[in-house]
Amino acid sequence: MGESPELERTNLLGLSGSELKEFFLANAEPAFRASQLMKWVHQRGLADFSKMTDLSRSLRERLSAMAEIKAPEIVLEQASADGTLKWLLRLDDGNCIETVFIPEENRGTLCVSSQVGCALDCTFCSTARQGFNRNLSSAEIVGQLWLARSRLKDVKDSVRSISNVVFMGMGEPLLNYDAVVSAMSLMLDDLAYGLGKRRVTLSTSGVIPAMDRLKDALDVSLAVSLHAPNNPLRDRLVPLNKKYPLEQLLPACKRFVSSKSRKNSVTFEYVMIKDVNDHPEHARELVRLLRDIPSKINLIPFNPFPQTRFQRSDPGSIDRFREILIASGLHTITRKTRGEDIDAACGQLAGKVIDRSRRKERFDRLGERLR
Ligand code: SAH
Image 1 (tube, helix red, strand yellow):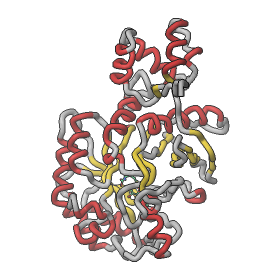
Image 2: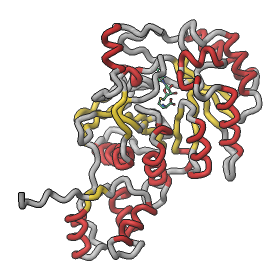
Image 3: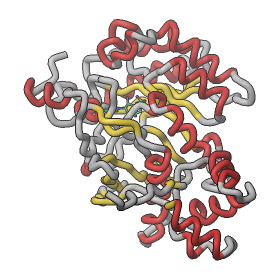
């Protein structure tokens, strides 16, 4: 007794511009301190308040005592033969998540995680097998970008800057709405990362109420994991479909593209699984389904992981599928598989999840997925 517990310091890394203003106002400082701090932290990558020279010495000391800039810790960096980089990041509670950087000729895409594991149970995704622990905080989400930017500065061999961010790592971002929106607003903010609205993409399995909230909150691009052209098949692949079936999901996509300033389209992701959803009839059904929605389709060759019974579609089937969509006027590309040799491709991210859903245990016991 008698000893005062160590004061918990406020982590400012994940606060959006307006949250940071509130923080300074609550501490009897003018709101413009928020802009000064954001530039130091997000544009210059600084975590040490004492080096932020346009703040008074006394403010720097106060900040050091009561606040911190804290990102997850990099515990492993892996490089793929194709230049893709994957980081394993440890969080304060011992969980680990993964973040992937994908360099291309004219852009560099960072794929961030939004949750530790995933609470959804998509049958073709390895993150689902890990079970679920918790939502990431906004600091843990934006911290992935903050860390990746500073790491990429040290790698000298090519042009490696982050021009795009996609929420396609571990987790369902729309089930962690508040933290994801704070993190995205920093990504868009000119005082922080200043990424254009077309360059920040949220991918969802189709959490309809949150899609409707998002369209009024922030101007970002939306990708929807479709994977099947009808309810019975989608129920099997994306069980969330039982709650939000296609006849509700597609109108929600339409509402998203027709809202306010948005004239762009929705990207539909469609994983190509051999003999499951890759027949020409599925393609024709997809055409009928998407006919009147401004859309782009990304075909993703299925990426295998241990204990899955699914296989990747043959290149020929993928090409035939794509041709049918293109012939019907649907803008379609096949996503190039990247980082496969380091398990960094879509659906292969696993991290280290201290599972609370007992799903991992169930899978390990069964040895393979039974559905
Ligand atoms: N929960 C979000 C974002 C995470 S997954 C969502 O469902 O959209 C990002 C994309 O990778 C999704 O389209 C997902 O369906 C796809 N994906 C998952 N597992 C895959 C696998 N094994 N092979 C290829 N793509 C996969």
